[in-house]
Image (cartoon, rainbow, N blue to C red):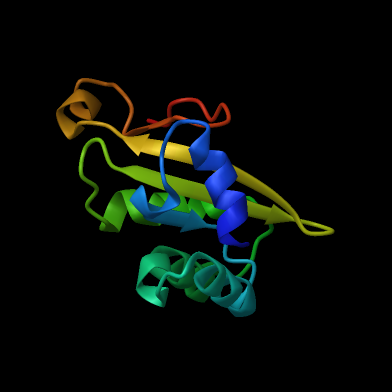
Length: 126
């Protein structure tokens, strides 16, 4: 995963990839996460939930990203209006990316979503 891939996803919405505070990445293995860190110029701290999910559950295919998302929702504070990138990897090295925007937690308490997709069609996740 390099900066070019994420830049394409976020640029459509006028966002720079450095504005994405949350990196919710499928932990396909330690090496995969290290390559993502290097490619995006981010530290391993930015991938804490991915590493923690890998440690707890291992790599369970691209669906593992949903466990990472669950960990982020449970353990990481997100500012309303901030952005995140959700990324999952598949066989033959395919990648799925989505730009997310965190919404107000009061709205979430009223039954709305915790986050919304800005990019490629990931619907609201409650």
